[in-house]
Length: 333
Ligand code: ASN
Ligand code: ZN
Image 1 (cartoon, rainbow, N blue to C red):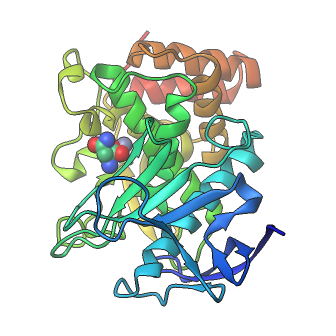
Image 2: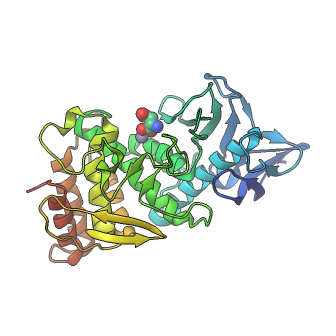
Image 3: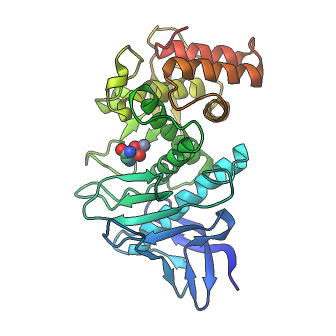
């Protein structure tokens, strides 16, 4: 009677027309993704508690590309969750946030003028605001991947959300947000090393964060220093985001998918990139097999080097690049 299929159509605000997993029940379709652990998408309709209502309608086309249609945010959120699920499943063989095949859920239209999105361990769910003023709904692909990755971090290393481990927790979400965006290969929202570029959160067209040189946002740190643990985790993430960019693409100026980057190093020495897929694999394996709740920057260096040694050998170009990228963000031996 319940039949999971994947030929729903989403007309999203940010990612164009996409395919969505939906489920037919009686005469209605719901945003319940049977191919991804029954991940569900709910409409809070400006509420701030509970689940609101599961998106449900008589046809299987969701949203019209505009935020005025309340189903559009649902389509964006469902698409982001599906791409993030597929990324971790296809690339690392991890099925869902806990790795147990069980889907979470998303809630959209949270509150009034709410300019944020968040993961919650207590509901095992993601929540998205509609933005306010110039800030658009927070339902872009990279934001969804960032929030869902918080769930994965909670259920693996469990990096404590303060101090240096908090910065590494935030960076983990930014790193996989970028990785998922590249993986999705969506022509309306191509992969980049920016976070939240679709939201226009400041109203001047700039993204929330930059990974090639995190200080481009005016607050994030480019390099580790003693005391970085006392800054906000969204800024102490900078050196790890920067490490990921350097390891992926290398130092200096480069254009990727039409976006120009210019990544410096603290020691002025060049870093040769090993490609995004290897860099992300190293971070994922470190997150899931080396890091603990209290891992700090020194521990992240040790853990990623151990992984690089296991995967490629300690005399490999990959191992050397991991070393050089950490040196480039002032995390030393
Ligand atoms: N959107 C923010 C984040 O995921 C919410 C928070 O501050 N935790 O980092
Ligand atoms: Zn976060």
